[in-house]
Image 1 (cartoon, rainbow, N blue to C red):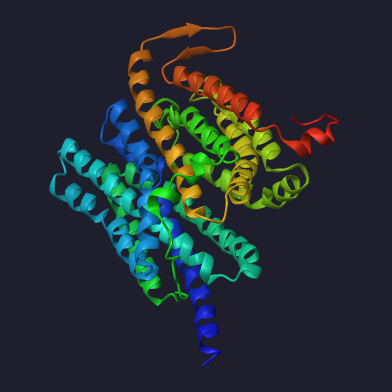
Image 2 (tube, rainbow, N blue to C red):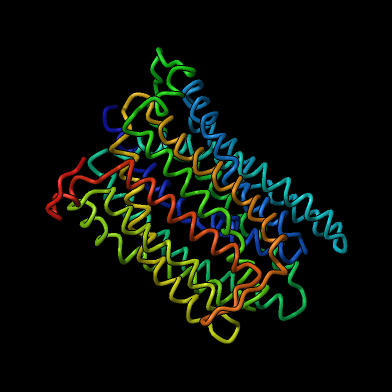
Length: 432
C-alpha cells in the first residue's frame, strides 16, 4: 500500500509534462500578440484594440478569488478541470460567430471581446489552482530540476508552434482568407485545450488539507502590510503601467506600419524564446552572486531602451526590430527570473498565495489602465509629426516615447525603495 501513492505521483509527473506540452500551443495562440492581430484584422479602433489587449491583465484581480476558492474547497483537480473547460473551450464560440456572421465584423468583434474576457477570467483562476497542485505534486528536492526540464520542452514546442502559426496565417492571407486563418488558429487552440482537460483528469492529486484557521479578510491584506514586500507591489504596478501603455501598439506597428509578415513576427518571438532557454543558466548564476534586485535593475535598464529602437524602424529597415528581439532575449530572461525570485524570497509562508496574487493584481491593473489610456492617446497623436535630425516622430512613436519615460520613472522609484546590498557591497558602497 505504501508504494501506490509514489507510483501515482510518478505517473502524475509524466502527465503534468504532457499537459505542459499541449498547453503551450493554446497559451501562444491566445496570447496578446495574436489577439491583437485578430482585432486589427477586424478593423477595431485603437481604443478597442487596447481594451482587448489589456483584458489578459485586468482579470488578474480574480487571482484573489481563485486563491480563496482553492483554499476553501480543497479539490484542486475538480477546480482545475472546470476552470479549464470555461477557459479553453470557450474560444469555439468565436469560431461559431465567425462562421455565422462572416461579413459582420462588428458582431464577430463583440463576441471575440466577450469570450476573451470570460476565457481570461477562468484561465487566471485555473493558474492559482494549478500552482498549488503542482507544488504538492513535484517533490521539493526535484522541483527545480523538473520545472527546468518542463520549461525547456515547452520552449521547443513554443518555437515550433510560433513558426507554424506565422507560416499558416501568411498562407491564409495569401489566399485572401485571413479571417479563416484566425478561426482555424482558435480551433487548434481549443483542441489542445481539450487535451489538457483530459490530462488534468488523469493527473494524480496529492492529499490537500487547507489550514482550518485561514481567514480570507486577514490573509488577503498581509502583503500590503508587509514593509519588505510592499516595494515589490509598487514597482510591479509602475512597471506594468510603463509597459502597458504601448504593449499592443508594438504588434499594431509591425502589421499596419512596418508591413511585417506573420512569419517575421513569429521569428521575432522565436528569437526571444531561444534566448530565454540559452541565457537562463547565466542569469541564474548572476542572480545568485549579485542578488535579485540588482539583476532586475540591470535588465530593467536594458528593457527601457527597447521603445527607442522602434523610432528608427521603417518597412525598408527592420534592423531596429531585430535589435529589440535580441535585447529582449537577453534582458527579459534575467528580469523575469529576478522578479520571480524576489516574490519567493520576500513573501512569507503564511498566506503566500495572496502575496503572489497581489503581484498579479498590481501588474494586471497597471497594464489594463495604462493600455486603455494608450489607446486613447494613440487616437489623439495620430496626426502629430515632429522631424528630428535622426528620425521623424509620428503615429505610434509618441506612445513608444511615453513608455520609455515611464520605464525610467518606475526604475528610479524602485532603486530608491530597494537599494540592493550585494551589488552595492561589490562596488565598495554601503547600502542604506
